Image (cartoon, rainbow, N blue to C red):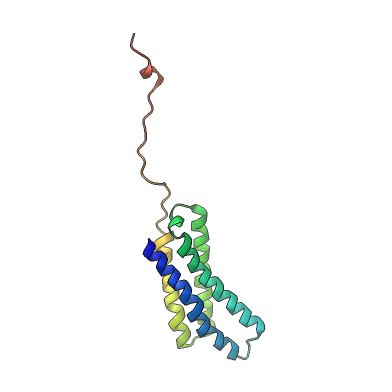
Length: 139
């Protein structure tokens, strides 16, 4: 589990640095790009990386917590939609080379942390309670 969390942290760093170096210059060069487009792209990249940092920090706890699992599903859905939008918006080879591995890591983290979904806290054998008539001394 620790190895998967380290992978999530490295993917978060890659999402911050590699994606910003790859996506922000084309966003500035396109004629439709303005100040708002650059802000939206920066916020999307930051949110994309924060999703990986979420898995790096609380990844092992998502298996047993229903609300964390729901939050993780929403994060992965956002990553898939935002990554697909970035690929659709900028179909350049450099963008594909950065975004496709990040999307594959998102799906891998989903199948590692969210999909197993253990509902019980672990195996605990039940202690059979003694009935009241068995506890009385014999007559």
